[in-house]
Image (cartoon, rainbow, N blue to C red):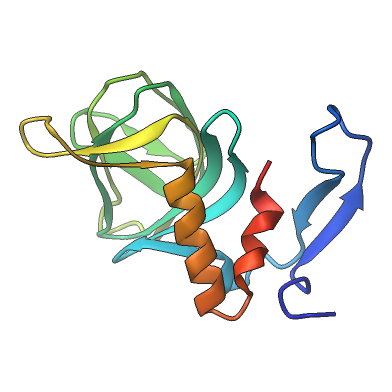
Length: 172
């Protein structure tokens, strides 16, 4: 078994649609740090699904204490669930801790922050459309869509020895 396939188990299932992949992919080694794709210092992404047909994706975002995800907005709703730790948005006065469901309405600008006293935060996010990073005045600086995320993951998996094709496990 190659190193790239050693960390996943494939389970065949009937396809919901003729063009759907024939497999459901499950991670068998969630402790494998190579799965986590770096976004920036102190922030990593764990791909779960890239929907290249409708332009969305699901991922777990990991942020170590003192880390943040730059100010951004989305053109479509985003849903999240905190799996571990806690975070807050600079633009709100609440804290999302383990078990908290988050809804980000389209167009809302927010900056995700994990405070120094939280060693590590994990949050599942289901994203449609794009992530549009903005400056202090809310003007778009750059955008990332599903294909940017997919390319970032492919390059990372090649670099860490899983192979560029490892990203295909997440494409739907």
